[in-house]
Image (cartoon, rainbow over all chains, first blue to last red; front, top):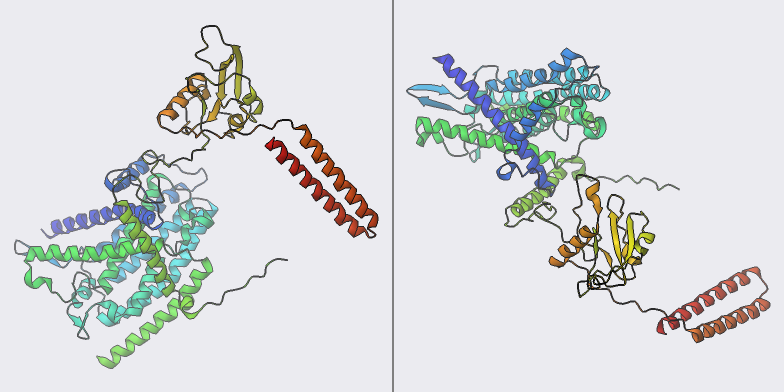
Length: 345
Length: 246
């Protein structure tokens, strides 16, 4: 019985992620259009909402083109290596509290493992292999440049990202993401909601900046900087292989947003209100899921918002920001957190 | 000399960068809200920067130069006399005109004694400069408001007499015909005026000569020459004005 529930949970959260990644491609295009005084795709369906479907059909029916000089195996492997970590990283992140059906308590999380976000960090780091392998396999100078940039960028930003997460571990005392979410109830200092962002403001800032770099989003989209290296690692890709790259990016965004909400924005907890007290077991499960999803959507949309506001950094600026600013800041944050915890607890 | 690069000194808030990003986010959010609101307004053309072409069309200016029209006069007669001056004026050589004499009994169709037997404008060659319109002594060919000229074959791009007339009827129906031009006053050959101007010229030359004699330095000579030229130009102007008055 347990494995049936597990499969249902896996299928549900997978399709849910894919659904919102699809909607994100639409939101990205229309949102950017609205920011730039354009209209965006508004022909397919109401408000152009069927545009992702049209795009999908187009990508699937396109010729699967492969350059003659490309390494066949690596070229085919690249998008797969990129998509698998993107689709599997969500496994340990909760998407709600718990739901009680027929006297059986079901935790709204695929796998409640005690190493929690170490798994997310590890899987997230694997995604760069997809980019590098694709870039190398394309046998194209722009592709390989994009792949190499991606490697250097990910290594640089993994450090402050990890350090920011470490400070969060100091605060919560656990790696378990569900445990972290459960700890963020009640109030902090008497008047603030007991959310991670109020205990770790600097950590949150570093986490966000590094997350943009991890997801290869503007202002750190150097692996695919189209004004410099055509389209970077996916220059030679077309059809659904390209689709996997683009789609994997949005799934990554969903995962990162969910991680951010879990760590810093109280997961499914509303500020000052305890939903479990006045909602039935089933409705509480659904409400916690919806609250969590809404919070994730805010972060997803902010990814779009920032993308169309901030111009791309130069490559040396990215490296300077990573090594000379974020890492010292993250270490400082770690030190302060450790000191405060040592002195108060 | 190249302009030296002046590096801007950044203030502390600018160097922190985050505050500036937040300002930028505010700006883009303003645009976003404005455009979202605008796109929910009723009507076809809502977002001010976008014309959704087949539904919204920009208003064209009354002097817009689109596809050619063959004009009719008040009695519905073709104004064109088939003189071929438009074909001569055309820099792209896209107009073919063949003149024919108006047969008896067909005077009600044509304004002149001759008419264009054949009138073809090759729109694949036309550059829409409007020289044909300027060259036409009868105001018979005019560039109209029609600008959707895409066709499937080259043959369809040959605008024949029927097409030219159809363009005229369409523009008339939509009320997009150009406002009638004011008649340009034709200069009559005014001989006395020319004589006067000549006298003025001679006087100016005399004066200049006298000054030249007085002048010693080369520089003063130059300036005098200039002065003389200016005077000549003035004289010419006066001549023109007199002509137009005449």
